Image (cartoon, rainbow, N blue to C red; front, side):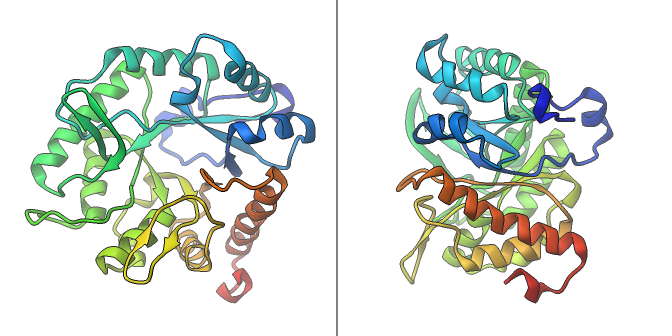
Length: 299
């Protein structure tokens, strides 16, 4: 589906309709600090993920770099402003810009978060949690369907880190996410770091969370670093991936099989070569799991 020598190839309608999980290897979040290094060094990265909102402009320097990198690497589009859980009507100017960008980039897929980001037209610039209720499932599944119809493609939805719980919750988060996916037909972007962070904050079993999800719907995995304050953990994306998250990643692959994987870093961003070296740990774990070797080999 992707030929690095001949540019980007997006997911074919036949592959999407088949429901078979495509594999694109191991990628990194594309950040402005690394634009020049990507073009100069041609790093051993299979694909890059862009933040959609950073490129919703007609031209300029970001789009120049995007076009140049797109000619060499497959890209995925990852958004932070869809606000799929909000009760506000969708911003159709935003949706049109997202659709136009997808037509130009031809991403392997488009994703956003299972959350809401604002109310009354005010953007909180944060990924806010939803109550895990049947009413919220119906609301979110309908909204995802509306977005997918508008974009003309299925999207991936990512689990977010949470720090509070709702007293009227009717189910666990994994059940909530699985039912939304079943009703809407979307896929899952599984953030393994977010599972670990939330499991620490709320005291649930991270492995049981993964086991409750429909494995065949998990099309991408995020890995990232977090800040551990003992009594609570915050998803900061400013550290290397921690051992506990690597271990959960390995156990997740044992349960669900190989999955397209990437590392995010949003602050204290190191040189590109350092992130490429970190990404090799994900490759090693993936190779060990595929070879059927014991878990000790992942250490």
